[in-house]
Image (tube, rainbow, N blue to C red; front, top):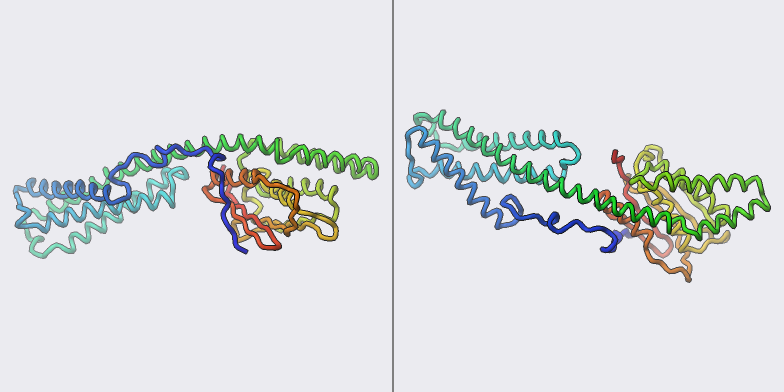
Length: 369
C-alpha cells in the first residue's frame, strides 16, 4: 500500500504573514550575497585585529612583506564566524529556543568554545618555527586569542538575539493561528461531526430499544450521554491522551453497533505503552464516522475497521472498501484533522488506498504540557 500526504486547502489555515516567513535579509542568512558581505566584513575585522596587535607592541608590519599573520587572522576569523553560524542553524533544528532557553544557550556556548579552541590550536600549529622566537610573541598571541574570543562572543550574541526573536515571533503567530483554527474546528465538531443525522439515528435506535428491550435502553441512553459529555468537556482541549480518546470511541462504537449490529466490526489493537500519547480530540471518531458514511455495511459483507499502531509513532485506521454510490464527499472532516496536525507539529496526516482497503495515519503526539 502506498501512502500519500493529505493536501490542505489554503483558505482553511490562517497563514503566517510573509514578513515573518521572509524577514529582512542580514549578513548571517544563507545565499552567496550575504556570504560575500560576511566575508568582506569579517576579513576586515581579522585584518584590523592583527594590525592592532602589531601596533600594540611597536611593530608596524607590512602585510605585503609578511602576509602570513594577516592571512591566518582573516582565515581564522572567517572560519570562526561560519562555524558559529552553522552551529546556530543546527541547534535551531535540534534544540529550538522554545523548549529550553538555558539548555540552548549552554549547548551553543559549549560548541562555539570547542570550535574556536580548535581554530586557535590549528592556527598555532601552522605557524613557522621562527615566529615563535619573535619578541613579544606570547603576549601578541595571547592578545590575539583574547580579541578572537571577544569577537566570537559578540558574534554569538547577535546570533542569539536574531534567532531567539525570530523564533519567538513565529511561535506567537503559530499559537494565535492554532487558537483560531481550534475555534473553527470546535464549531465544526459540534455542528458537523456529531451531526443531527447521527442524533436522529441514535434516538430512533433508542425508541426501538425502549419498546423491545427496556433494560438495554438504559445502557444506550447512558452511552449517548457519555458521548456528548466528552464532546462538551474536551472542546477546549488542543490534544487529549489516547486512552481517553479510545474510551470515548468505545462508547461511540457501541451506539453505532446497536443500530448496525453485526454489519459493523471495529478492532482496536493499541499497546499499553502507547496509551499516554496524545491526539486531537474527536479525531478517531471523525475517521470512524467517515468510514461508516462512505461505505456499505451488511451482515453478509460487514464494514471492518481496524485501529492500530504503525511504525511506532503513527496511529493507523484502516477499513475495507465497500463504497456507497450515492454519497458525495466534501473532505471537510479530513481537512479538519489535517489542519490541526499541521499547526501542532508541522506534519501532514497521510493516507493509503488499494482496491480493497483504505488507511489513514495520524502522528502520535507527546503531551504538550
